[in-house]
Image 1 (cartoon, rainbow, N blue to C red):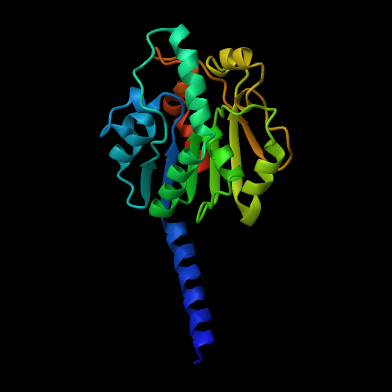
Image 2 (cartoon, rainbow, N blue to C red):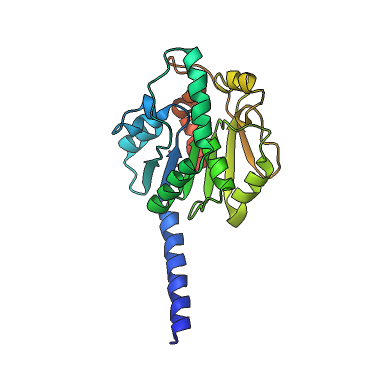
Length: 237
């Protein structure tokens, strides 16, 4: 067998191995939103997505891994709404810079996820990272939960980029999201998590958010819409 044939065989074996591995295993990377670095201490990353963490603790699925991406700023928690908005805009700029993209890229290379779940401003980070040329690697499905992305951004180009290589893109929305509402007023721009996806071929899912257990509706999606999210992750319960 020639060197070229050996190389081709090696590539084919690697591709087949990855396909089989990905079919048997779900490696999920979760990209949290605004304030995660000051609201969740190191070592307690399960608090980013407590509902999913509890599912894994209870069911102990051998085929599933869940990883978290820390990318935000390190600041003291805001004492009130007046302090919150300046911090929000600093973190919004952070989600748009190359440093955050580099953190996400390193994470993808290290963990090799086949599913990315991005919540709120985490979706904005992913949007910007794709514009920077993010290598998505083995990712085959992307779920944007209440994405904090301005509708004035080039969402069409982002969506087409994601759909390359037959990747699936799912996006959830609710017009009365209690965090995206004030943000859209303050910024003068509706957010993608408030409206159906404006382009064909993208799966838009309406989740009617409500307050439960003193959880705000924007973050409550991570705890109270788990069964619906499981469906889009392909989890059988």
